[in-house]
Amino acid sequence: MTTSKTNSATARLKQDYLRLKKDPVPYVVAEPLPANILEWHYVVTGPENTPYDGGLYHGKLVFPREFPFKPPGIYMITPNGRFKTNTRLCLSISDFHPDTWNPAWSVSTILTGLLSFMIERSPTLGSIESSEYEKRQLAGQSLEFNLRDNVFCDLFPDMVTSIKTELERRAEVERAARSNPQSVTSNDMEALLRNQFGHNDQSPLYSAITNLCVVIGFAAFAYTVKYVLRSIATE
Image (tube, rainbow, N blue to C red; front, side, top):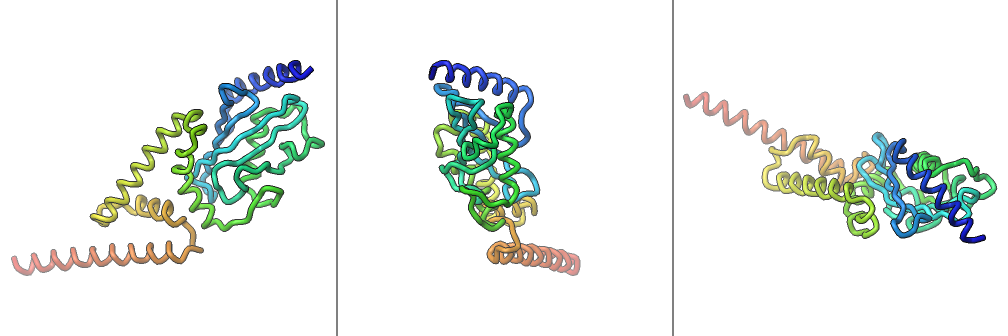
């Protein structure tokens, strides 16, 4: 009987995988473990205009052998400011609520529901309270965090390549900001500050550094104008 249930779950999950590849869920990708189709890992890309923008959030779904007649356990692995990490999350689509589970729901349904719940603020067992500033800080730190996870690196090699490229770009901007601040564009400087300190008016440090950059930029401009005027007067 156990083998029969496992075979049923395997067949359904294979179908869901093909559907997910054909019709991806916005902002979310997912892959099963090669050696265990009952454990899937997903990555949420933080949507624009949310505190999660710029972040990548790795988690996992653990399906029972009785799937699709019983729901999966849902976990978040990457620190995010919304959910506890490595803790079963109490969602209407998770194994905390088998009474509300619908066997017609697919992996795509689960991932869509998870994303929807992540970007809202409703409390639940496994959720945590944090400010937007803290969430943005964690978004900036999420890339390096994920690179230290072997499962993430094995299942999402394209993302690993993109992360390394982005981290190198950040490092170049930071080096340029230290050696020649005038060469850094305002967009790059804002991104650098967001990655280091978060981007939120609640952060006094962010505001202070932003104001300092403005002052330095104005001073550099004033010096340039003064130099040009002196050159003209000399001529």
